[in-house]
Amino acid sequence: MNKIFVDTWAWYALTDAADTDHALAQSANEKWLDDGYTFITTNFVVDEATTLIRYNPHHQAAVQFWTMLLNLIDAGLVELVRIDETLESAAWEIFEKYDDQKFSFTDCTSFAVMRALDLSHAFTGDRHFEILGFRVAHGA
Image (cartoon, rainbow, N blue to C red):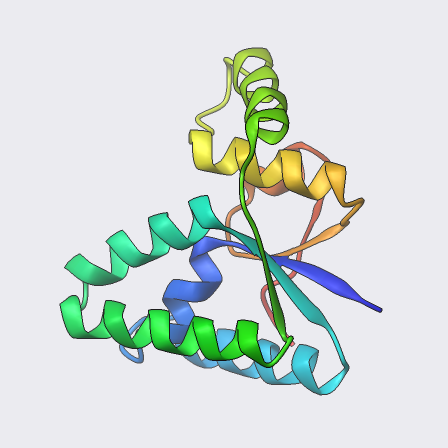
């Protein structure tokens, strides 16, 4: 089964119809789901996306995002990985090692999950993923 990591960029672009990348993200989302991909994301990414969506565009959009996400999880289309101590430790090692980069700690947890699950592609517009050798996939 094909899997792709879904970052905050994608969740935000999918949720906010006014976002400049909304149509691009929608097209990619439909293609990957049609091709049988399972989306992998984390509780840290969901936290970051929810907070971003809450402030722009608004609270109700964040509630709608959560409803959509829970439906996708229930349908088996999204796997939610919870960051545990092992992943947190691996993320911290990445964070410390790349002091010359402006990675958020959430980015580092995403990198740790992608390494742990041997994922090569991320549905994101964030080029930080490429620095660690992952492929950025943000279009169909």
